[in-house]
Amino acid sequence: MKHFLTILSHELRMLLVNASTYVAAVLFLALMGFIFSGVLDNYSKAAQETSPATVFFQLFWIPVLFMVPLLTMKCISEERRLGTLETLLTAPVTTTEVVLGKYAAAYLLYLFLWASTGGFFYILHHFAQDPRLLDFGPMMGGYLFIAVSGLFYVAVGVFASSLSRNQAVAGILAFTILFALIIGLNYAATLEMMNLASMKPLHAALDYVRTFRHLEDFSQGIVDTRQVLFYLSGSVLMLIFSILGIEVKLLHS
Amino acid sequence: MSEIPELTIEAEHLVKTYGSLTAVNDLSFTVKRGEIVGLLGPNGAGKSTTMRILTGYLPATSGQVNICGLSVATHGDEVKKFIGYMPENNPLPDDMRVSEYLHYRGRLKGLGRSKLSIRLDEVLELCDLKRVRHRIIGKLSKGFRQRVGIAEAILAEPPVIIMDEPTIGLDPHQILIVRDLIASLRGRMTVIISSHILPEIEMTCDRVLIINQGRVVAQGTPADLRREVFGHSSYALEISGDLETALPEALARVEPTLVIAETAAPDAAGFRKLILTTTREGDLGETLMRTLSADTRLRLRALTRVHPTLEDVFLAATKRGWEAIDAPKSSSK
Image 1 (cartoon, each protein chain N blue to C red):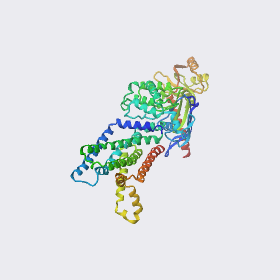
Image 2 (cartoon, chains in turn purple, red):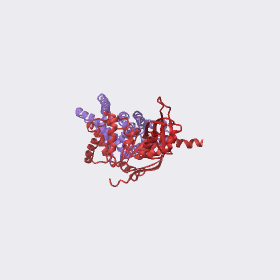
Image 3 (tube, chains in turn blue, purple):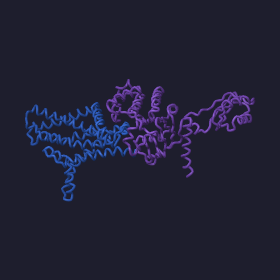
Image 4 (tube, rainbow over the protein chains, first blue to last red):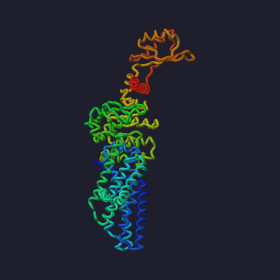
């Protein structure tokens, strides 16, 4: 792990000098701002039961589905396309260090982008002067959920990137996997046939991996270690697959 | 670098197959410390594959490679520290500055910050890159990019340097610079380069390995190769007169093994171009000239000893390789 920090700092530096990072960040913040003001608009019309933070984080999947593929799609496929993966892997570094370095850089940027949405809550707090609008608990729970689930989602993106030398393919693959994980599993759990007695074990399993239920728990301040473990094990699995993905391609190249 | 053994590269019975295609077929060779070795071969001969196996980037299907006494297969991470590698087409990131890139690579190769900044200046000077150290690599010309690749390979002063076609796409002036650069490494580092440009290899390399169809078809110094591949020396003459009886007689007097290999049609003045070959070593030029001009039946206009170029050696050796490979196939049919 000697070179992990070297690769991480290099990757972060490359992200920071790249114009596309700033374009993505601006678009992300514009979208989030739009969502946030939409949520506030509802509050100004009628009193709501839940706090704005809860509603805001319930829409987390919109930016996740677009931002995660955008952030991660180039990390390995670009190196493979340019051939710099060969120079990188013939330097005294291991594939694990390369994957972890790139993963950590993408994850940190992901966290940073989400953290910058904290500004919305600050502006709300500053100008509304209404403590009811700024419920600290759901907000922190929401950010914690973003941080924990982000581990898994970014790992999915890195994995997709390790499979193809084409960025667009990697991006679409990441989008598809994330869509299946977030929306698909949620949809499957609510299917009518899941209420059948014979489907009970499957229903229980699907219920366990339902992202929206995790978000609900986190927002209410419940940090269930089973859920944390789900995201942690998922990300570890995805990272192992990414490492294997790179090495298998070498074996069969 | 006292712990570097005498034999820096030992490859034994390397085989690499891609599906049904055999890229490298039972390749064995050794390279001594400080030697510059050229890897020659037609396209698809397995040069790049061999180099990738040496660096540990690709695993061999079977066989063994030792770099500085360590097996690439089992000690991959340690072996990587001994090697500076420049892959085919010299891939470089387009959006970094030259000094940034070299600094990053130096850190990856485990150089400490203070040592790296000294070494970076040395390497930039050596490769004549000082002028472009703050330029973005993607905007550099091909010659500069190539030199950045070479600078990267020699950056950590590894005992073994492997470069896949370092002079491809360079103009003659740049080739000269790169050649001098490689020659300046002689004795300190083991260098393996592959190339199509034969005069190039002949000038820089101590030893040449000619590879065809994944096998070594010839190896040795360029002079050895000439002797090994052709097995004889040749002379070209332009002569007229009684070539039927007088010439063979005269030749037999000079050296019994001299034979006429080729005879061309006579030109306007009646002179024919002849190629003589002999298995005898040493220079027969002078005696040949005297004997032939002394003979009144013959008129000699020109006589030269033919030096086969490495190109001829290469063509003959790769052709021989094809025949050796094709022969067992056609006999089994």
